[in-house]
Amino acid sequence: MTMYLFKIISLLGGLALFLFGMDVMGKSLERLAGGKLQTLLAKMSSTVFRGLLLGMAVTAVIQSSSATTVMVVGFVNSGIMTLKQAIGVIMGSNIGTTITSWILSLSSLEGDSFIVQIFKPSTLAPLLGTIGIILFMFTKSEKKQGIGTILLGFLALMTGMDMMSASMEFLKDEAWFAKLMVSFSNPLLGILAGAVLTGIIQSSSASVGILQGLCATGTVTMGTALPIILGQNIGTCVTAMISTVGANRNARRTALVHLYFNIVGVALFVIIFYGIGIFFPWHMLGDTAGAMDIAKIHTGFNVITTLVLLPLHGVLEKLAYITIPEDAKPEKEALLDSRLLGTPAVAVQRAQEIAGRMASTSREAMDLAMGLTKSYDPAVMDKVHNLEEKTDKYQDALGTYLVQLSSQHLSAHDNHCLNTLLYTINDLERIADHAVSIAKAGKEMYEKKINFSESAKTELGVLERAVHDILDHTTEAFINQDLYMATKIEPVEQVVDGLVREVKSRHVRRLRGGQCSVNYGFVLDDMLTSYERVADHCSNIAVEMLQTAEGRMDAHGYLGALKAGELDESAKYEERFAEYKARYIFPKEKD
Image (cartoon, rainbow, N blue to C red):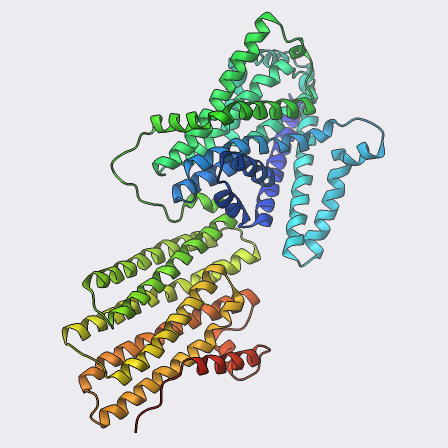
């Protein structure tokens, strides 16, 4: 009894180390890939076949079909991906996840050659682990440390696998265990066992690894392994199904397609394979299964199922629509899906996209508002208000999401992006607020029949052109994370400040000469204040991008040093300032 207790403790320890190594490998690979995962999945899965290839590649990288499927559900829920695009990715993820079983099957390599010996886990895992700890502890590069973490994860994975295999060897002499394995040769019991185990640990790769570990007992036959592997493919759908709680209809359909794909695949395989066995017995089912055999079955089933069902992807889509029919009630778009927080690099990129939309919305609101000062239109006024309300919603959604995201383990690059977003969304929202102020000034001019002099109109035209350009520069720099474009914004902001001061001075001179009314001055002052502050917010965004990306000093310190000629880029700043000052000039005043 004591021996059994120690063996069970060793088994649980091996399982813990195995699952930990798999988790570390997957998350480290995901961080190394960064936000490219979203770009690949959402923008390049235009056809089902391309989605299939991308699903295979991404799942092979992050070592988890469940993680890929949950990510896809989040994409569909957010409107990034259509259900049709998602189907191919889901099919590909089932094939991509089999790469883990091939890695684990290295333990079954046999032979005395140097190549075979070097690739045996007993040699390869310690070797890679040694390289990993050197990279992790003695390098400063985040990328190298990430690679080191992956290698350490591999060491933990293989060590856990060896511990599980060693702790389960005693089971080969246990009659009850041999009887249990024989009972799983019954397709229904085997499928149920595989589905339940995988559903509990929510990873088909891990459950396949456990099955490969059981092969060390010598009691696992091909007839036992086959139905268990079939059940594991159904059990892996549990994670995606759970993730759809609170999701929209298309997201729920996506999880159902994953479930239907595996259920139909298993059903067809059982009917055809065991149906043939009735007339032509499969003698190989009585053979003892090894780790390599498990990998072959796992891969073979998923490849065959995909080849059969790929042409029928439209049927799976229709089946999902029949299960969850359309509803006349429109669904609210999930701008930022919490499911993506499980893959922080993807979540950061998604937040950047939404912030980019916010930037474009603020710019559109300001462009429309400036038009209202020349030709007032109530419909345009309403649109400006609607756009401003939209930026408020963006700010609320992003603020909450970014706080949640900040608690995740992020790479240095993603952390920089997160900080930039946290500090800039308020500036983007304030730009829209100033657009409303400009629009109200236009409304006041219309209602009070205020008409500026031709000189004032010309001067405002020059100023508004500069404001329009700085908004364009800022939006482009922010959406594309273009640091070069960001360096062009501060010189324009300084020019806008100068133009505002000059407009005010000229207005005062016209006021003294009786060429302008005092009442006009109040409206003009409101407009000038808004334009100046819009330029200030653009400057804040640009400076935050630059200092966050390059680890600079605080914003005020940076600007002071830049204008004082203390930085390397100060010369370029002066050159651009002179260029923009010459571009935005007022005509000479008449005597």
